[in-house]
Image 1 (tube, rainbow, N blue to C red):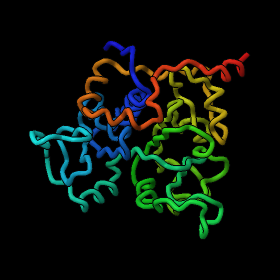
Image 2: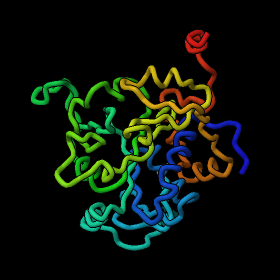
Image 3: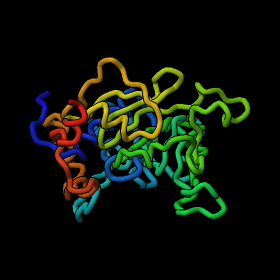
Length: 276
């Protein structure tokens, strides 16, 4: 398949995110947010046609819904009913893979969407609460989406409030082992990472075009594992971009990253000078 020459960073991240679902088989994919949802939908249309999708409807769909305005002629392709009670049955059976966007992630893969600040009773910032994170993280696979890779997201020490289970032996529930915690890919605006480094360390998998290893390391608040050879994140193919355009005809993806940057960027002067 021919690689595209002109693509946005959002489109690069969508295609990288789709890879998280490639080998899942018939599981329910849940993408929280525009880019994760398009990533799951792209995977269903290309690398894993067995993937199941609800797109926030009470039905499993044969085709992922486009986002944005659907028009009067749109007909949703329902396959079977998927009400709320069946969602829980699905979650508990481990037949789900969610791509979520935490506010904080720590060295163990624990995440936080609840509150910021060292005093949980008086947080500096109150957010969503833990919602479904504890049950989701202990029951099924999770990947992370981070639109702005920095040390405020990838924090030193533990998250201010641990809302999901990670690879931390001190916090494992009774009867669980580290092997029961299924953390997959981490897709950021700088790189693709996973938790397959030594001792479950966060590992750098690929760099987006124009990004350096030093830049990723400097923007991560804890030590990550960097292999000897780090590849460049593959460019989207023309076929993938055509499918993404069908899934997002209103180009909502262009508003997800500040300035809608290109997927290929030149190294900044500061980065170049730091390598001299």
